[in-house]
Image (cartoon, rainbow, N blue to C red; front, side):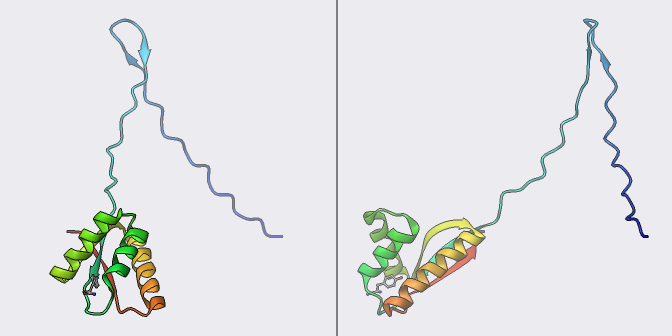
Length: 122
Ligand code: TYC
């Protein structure tokens, strides 16, 4: 009969030696490990202008999927209309991708050609 090899026990890190304190009390000093996490790359969701999608539809989409109030959504929509594109929000990659899917889904369902992309923030 075969027995599974038992992995060797993991050796715990050595306990630092007590440090003699001037006052006579012993203390264990643990070294702090340097933090090596970096914040995630963020992605901006950019909406593009077109000649056919109604302004009102764009405003409602921005309110609905980017949690903007009506005034802010209107300003973003007008910026897109005038400049050709505009940022609706900035998110971690997966959330930005979901926002793009939601916008494109709503636009297709309503029969509008609205386009939206996500791109890494510099
Ligand atoms: N240009 C469109 C119109 O005049 C409005 C519009 C704004 C469309 C923003 C798309 O992302 C857009 N009806």
